[in-house]
Amino acid sequence: MTYCLAISLNKGVVLASDSRTNAGVDYVATYSKMTSFVFEGNRSLVLLTSGSLATSQAVINAINKDLDDPTAKFDISKGKYLHEVAEYIGSLSQKEQNRHAKAMENSKSSSESSFILGGQILGQKSGIFLIYPQGNFITASDETPYLQIGENKYGKPILDRFITRSTSLEDAARCAVVSLDSTIRSNISVGPPIELAIHSEGVIEKPYHSVLTSNSIMYKSIQKQWNEGLKRAFKRLPRFEWEKPVK
Amino acid sequence: MTYCLAISLNKGVVLASDSRTNAGVDYVATYSKMTSFVFEGNRSLVLLTSGSLATSQAVINAINKDLDDPTAKFDISKGKYLHEVAEYIGSLSQKEQNRHAKAMENSKSSSESSFILGGQILGQKSGIFLIYPQGNFITASDETPYLQIGENKYGKPILDRFITRSTSLEDAARCAVVSLDSTIRSNISVGPPIELAIHSEGVIEKPYHSVLTSNSIMYKSIQKQWNEGLKRAFKRLPRFEWEKPVK
Image (cartoon, each protein chain N blue to C red):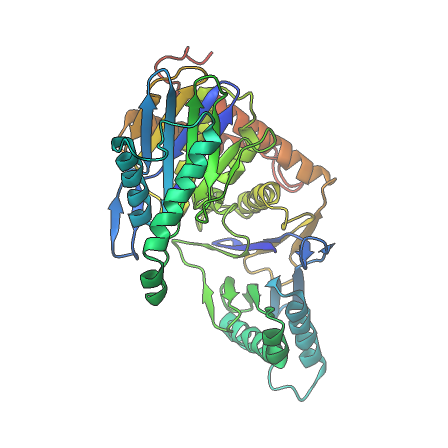
């Protein structure tokens, strides 16, 4: 399994992903699920992947192949709008899945992948899209400024509490790390390192990118502070009538 | 959907449940999912239900019918061990499901229900059991002292952080309310009031029982304090290198 999320803010876009993949519980591995495509001054895009690793990698390969092929009808550097790029990725994903559809059906396996595309094209606002395995896609809204793929439930409450469009990039990034960390604690199919990308509105260049391993100071410090903060919050909760008041 | 949980502690057992049921999104209703069976000085049991409301109610009816029937082979007041009672509830559940199995299959519906049984029989330690729709069951362990049924993911991280066997009954009860409240915020199929039962080890009588409606002072106060505590914890998280330090 996987857990990736993206948050669309007034000041830009925050994206985060875990790095665990598994084919059954006895084949667990670490793979990055975040890929950047930067065309400086034109567009800065980040793609997050979840689901079949084979399909996810095949889609990334196809994106790069199209970029190298001057006869390709479309590639990730083209299109005026982000949703055109989302459409393109959806169609690549469908093509890759269809290629193996019969064999997958015979082995009762799934080659489905979901994607999150985030970033900005010059002259447009930044945005995020969730591309379903079927190739169709949705974007975020003012009411729900975030999108998630993979193991999304454990880390959702914290997003529902804190994230609005006006949240700062840094607060959203911290919230994303906490959301991922809560998921990692509760579900073994999601694991570190956590990758984090921060795209600032209007800055069409490589986004800030950080890899938080289990030993990284920033990650350890977030874990420690959050745990202590929760403990303090917990201690302050109201007492039952028969309990002594809080000191 | 539903979310119920039970926590097994050195000092007793805490049980909590939401009250929302739905048959599709256009038929949402409020039902208690917590039933107490108390035989003072002999046993105090609490049953939580999730899944098909028809099966859950049929099982409660069957329990009461057996209690009234002097010729019944077994009833909930019998058995020396809690696991015998769990076995009995599992078999009632299977019987009720089998009764409608063909009709349910024809309509592609499910009559599956899960149960949590918690409480204490005189002379035994208190305990909790999760009874699967198939009638088999598991109990908690020192490593995982809680059991959940229904929509269990949103509310799991907080349990993983705070609950051990040595947690006090009151802290576990607060944690259960926070776990339910987080789920209620993130999933519309789980809703108030929250029912809470606290059984103290060795006290074989009706457990403490509280119904926290959306307007109850205790519930509002837990929500408010927890939200404020989380905000404080969030504000204290470490800054990125380019940010000003926390005031």
